[in-house]
Length: 333
Image (cartoon, rainbow, N blue to C red; front, side):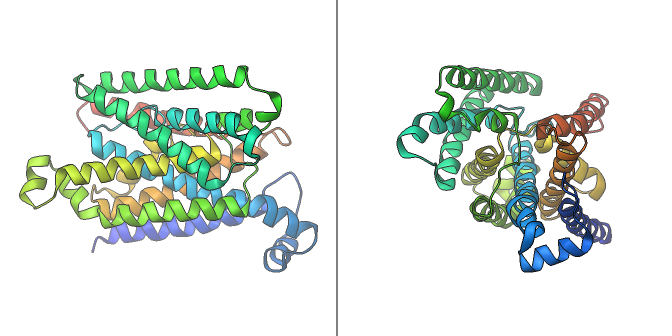
């Protein structure tokens, strides 16, 4: 057993618990440690309302959706053998954003509140459409840079269509659309957390079950076939899981940038291994920690004004992507 990997995973678990605890205290309303403990366990009083209606759902959402986004990025990097592939860069998040916005604008006025399942379903359709376009483009272009450029262009097209719909939509249908479209964990409820947890945990378990085939696939399709891996089925599973995980994030929090690219690379450098059995849980925990910390910064640094989550994740994630590109140019990646 790799002692370093075990130690890193234990540290990530401790940091996850610590980040959750810190998020319970951080906020515009000052709550003492005694009030936090009483509010968490009893759920009564003003502190209990703040914790169970705002802070706890928001922190759990950041943990689950941040982990899902990092895991989706890892799967896309594995699928395309591309170190800077990710849901945001390849336009997957923008495709999901387009279909969710369409459902929110067109269906909200007729059917009232949209259910969590419908949001995830709409986002999944959009993410899979974007992935389908990327797959078609990947058959025509050569080189990582061209694939990324095409993904960015697809993202811009989807974002432009979303902005067009928002511009001509009724104000009543887009009350919460602007903050959501910029990326935010605000407004999360425990019902949202339960729906997200069901989809994300199922995706995590399925990805863990595929760790051995993914490890063989990383060494080349010929090697994977020689090991008995059904490559076409595996590729379909990887692309479906990455689309589902990215869709969950976009459905509830909107598009969140750079987490899906940066966290898998941080996990590889920290673990010093490329084995999926270690990287998958590390990516999930690392993504959760990354998003919880960034969300805490977004809502506290200029309180009561709140930044979009993508603003903060870009500040910390973009340097990692630049470092990866420079290392790749030197032949280190």
